[in-house]
Length: 62
Image 1 (cartoon, rainbow, N blue to C red):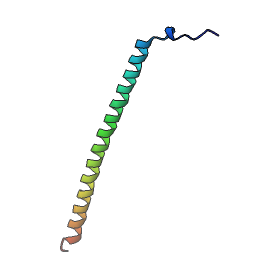
Image 2 (cartoon, helix red, strand yellow):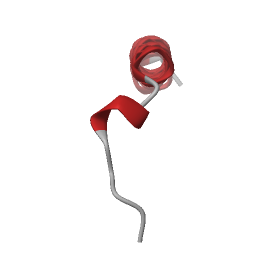
Image 3 (cartoon, helix red, strand yellow):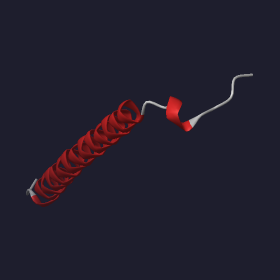
Image 4 (cartoon, rainbow, N blue to C red):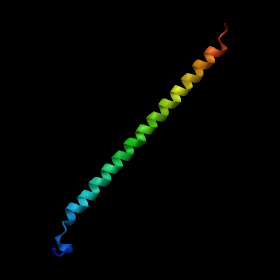
């Protein structure tokens, strides 16, 4: 089994990999945040639309 040595590590590439991963995670998180924001807006819109429709049907004279 070969001996492990700290000088054998390519530190620049390792740091670049970590930075790229953290950027990817940040992009993923911001994308999920945007998605949940849009989903919340759509849910509020659909709920209001549902309530208005129900009120219109309920209170329209027959």
